[in-house]
Amino acid sequence: MLLGDIKIRMIDGSEIDMSEFAGKVLTIVNVASKCGFTPQYAGLEALYQQYKDKGLVVLGVPCNQFGGQEPGSEEEIQQFCQSRFGVTFPMTAKVDVNGPQRHPLYQWLVERATDDAGDVQWNFEKFLVGRETQLLGRFRSLIKPEDPEFLQKLEAAL
Image 1 (cartoon, rainbow, N blue to C red):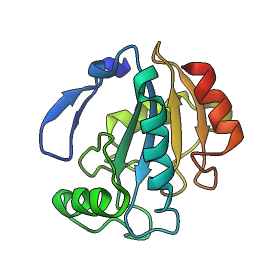
Image 2: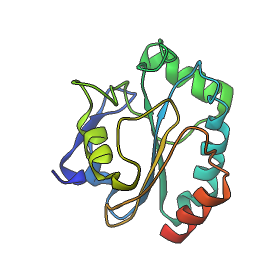
Image 3: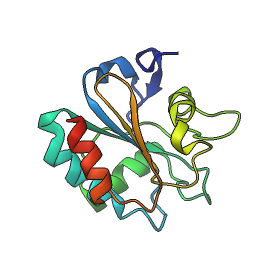
């Protein structure tokens, strides 16, 4: 399966093909509103603002699989992200990132994470995808968006 063949429902209910992000650098992050890592929304938005004109897309993917930390509706999630963190980057509808109902996007990501294989471990795990739709890195939840190692890989991809 190619990344561009995957469809995903956005938080506003529309459906897009991942091919819409062709030629962009993607940071795909499973997010949650009631998590200790939720303040990373601010760093993700700052990254998006700093690098979107160079081709970065941050894609927030709400998920309620870790401690029930994303219990709200899409509307509640969107309202929280915009009012609390000023989020303007694209957000998807809630999906599963692990298990039998894993969304095809996360199936694609996890299958390619050969250096750090296995299921998504917690909220705010970041996958960096290059312009040629290659997985460039996987960064676990403790790695913040402003982490030097993450920024170095991101800037090199841009």
